Length: 332
Image (cartoon, rainbow, N blue to C red; front, side, top):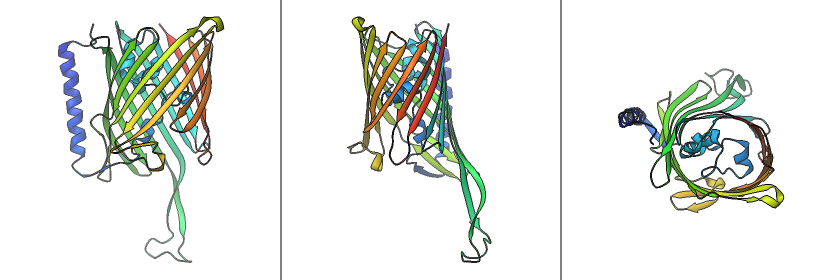
């Protein structure tokens, strides 16, 4: 069974084509590949994922599938919502995630994702007298305080494909605001996923498929280059311990240099490996650990009835520790 009729599929394709034309028109001005322009889109979704090294392409939570891999929405059997709050750099940078998934038809579902990142208390400076050069009698003063805001709205769908595969896609609307300047953009993500028996799953996703454009009010356009993700998940039950064990791993390839943040240099692409393990006790308490690149992550979660609460921690000597808390809810 397919999620949309042929007529509806053509209408969706027309909308996507129109958005692509609009994004392409933005390229007519000064256009550059924006290094780290889409960094806030790579911050992840939920605490469970970060605790296991940032994995999620093959086996995410239902409410976070629209972000990690929209094809995984096709396995959603219940309505699900998840909210996450994270702090970075000793609370100077905050990041929030809100995800929702809803089964639409048999083996198909839709999802909505909101990402919001913010930096407050950014000083905007100017000379006391802009008409005169800098000097002892004309110093730099703080003109006012400002903030940096980054927002993404993603609308996703996952559905059956062929040969046991599920496919999915997302349309995302982007906004950035820094001081008096702002930018708007649009992007597209696609994904594939398949379960291999009862214990294993694989997934693939391409983010910013056509190169997401951010058109600034200054006339400058930044392009977020595509990135490719592949992941696998394997789990097993441990009846004698009343526990379940799951091991997961992802690779993300970006078509840009990451400088000192680059883990694996593969020529035109930089590759970041991620891996994690989850030990679930009596389907209530989860203990997790992982590697995000070469950084250790850890966390725990508790699930009671239809409510889950997860925590993740990532240490960093120079930039401060990252703490992430998320709460999830599912219902029929």
